[in-house]
Image (cartoon, rainbow, N blue to C red):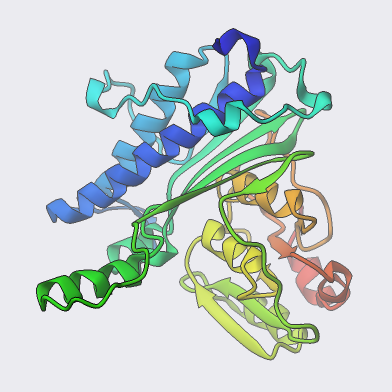
Length: 323
């Protein structure tokens, strides 16, 4: 019975199913062919029909089940009745079977703030770089990110395309397990699940940074890290996944462009496996409901060796980015 589970674990179990539903919406919009793109503040700040529908689905589904939650979504949408087909009422049973960390067992619904990015990596989504896209649902308590869900709607996308091509050619060769999409989740004190943790080889310094929001500050900061390689990709969720899967050793973003809904869920996944995410000055990010949405002092995140990267942030960059 649901009432025997803590509020936090019920919320995470619901967020898992809701994120999966949002991922399905993201795939459906692109398959239908009309992205409904509008510019928000500039040519790199876009919103699509998928952003709008996924946010309506996530926020309405959460609010129905947890009416006392504070929910903050990226998209500024007018209030309207949400179509029943956008509502997800399920809960992921495997999460309900996990023990709630004792420090969170007495949390009340009204004490939690949920940060929602319905489609992280919108620009990449519009350009067909689908493996950059994630759906992010982060849960905060007393200003700290404590639980999170990341759905990758197009995980296994390349394998899936290869599989389709084989089927089209009637090749009998058994392809990889090409199930499209996956969901990663985590709770501080419990762990992070849904992926295989991997580290970059020792001594390698591979930086992941912004693809579409580059600037002199970003370049100066990345260069100061003396990287062996630099990966320019979209989406904060995608970059954190690169850290936990051994593709990059640090996520460096010396710019005020990132928001709380970009970092809340990914931060939890990273912290749950021993990584660290801060602003460029080394300050922890705050996620209470009154906080400003912009991460105005940038982002620095690593799975390991945080101090190596933090010590190399130039003073000129720190002076330019005010917390």
